[in-house]
Image 1 (cartoon, rainbow, N blue to C red):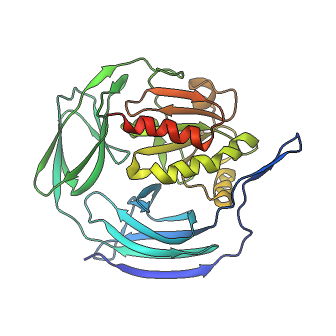
Image 2: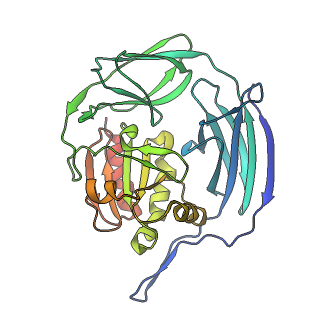
Image 3: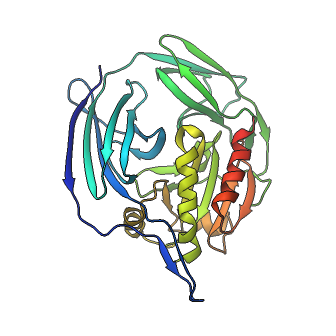
Amino acid sequence: MPFTRIIKRWMKWAAPPVLGIVWLSCTIEESPELQTGSIEVRLFDSSGTEIYNAEIYVDSVVKGQLTPAVLSGVAVGQRQLRVWKSGYYPVDTLVEVLQFDTIQVSLDTKISPTGAIELLDAPAGVTLLLNGEANGQTPPPVFPTIGIGSYRLSAYLPDHATDLPALWREQVTWADTLHIAVHFTEATTGNQTGSLTIPFSLPSDWNRDYAIEDWRGHVVLLNFWFIDCPNCILEFPYLQQVYQESGGDGGFQILAVNPYDAMEDIRQFRTESGLTFPFLSDGEHAVSQTDYNVGIYPTNLLVDKRGVIRYRVGRVTYDELRAWVDVLLAEQ
């Protein structure tokens, strides 16, 4: 059985993170202080060999970082930690996160049996997506050696919207083949409402690239921001709250694209702010300004499960974002 091998703590003293901005009009608006700590996560197989690129979940929300990783900005209190990679058994444990602490967690797992997934009626060039990660293209339509476990499953075809239902929550079982019928509708890409999202892949501050097309089947918020943008910083607590409520297995993802700041500055901002959704660097401005024609910051594009832009707005409030995300998540 998988088990927790080591849990250690060491103190890291720092000033508590505060998201606050003073407006030029001399009015002051402060965001709530986030009480956070960190978790260092590593995964090993039964022989003691370290396993790389396993997904990490905290309270059922996928964190985007892959093992080995240090999760910063984790809310204090008791947290359910899950680490899992296809082909291995998932590992669950409880950790107590304290402010300014870093909890070191090393976990053991074992190789699991495998099953298979077959995409029915899938034309050539369809990409199978498992938990927001590409897993191969058709043909052939059968994808073997899929580790047993529960998946958020979708499919992507260039220049096509994925017909609803675009996200399936399915269990892959040992020595069995899961059959999924997928259908697509031809669509035009663009940067305005009603258009299919323009494909892109950008590096993140977690040393992992994120592609918008890999999140087909999820509701996705494309958030364009930079560090010295007051309105960008002021809306982040609202984005974080909705992400905590519906991210990961909830089917909602945020991709925060920054065209101006260096990656090291983005990393430092995350450490100080406690935000936990992916930050992407668009250093060439190709995605932000060329593809998506962003001239005002923040700009937020909310994308439905099919990959179609449904809302394009500036700064958002919690109530607005919560209502829009709920509508799109409910679509079947």
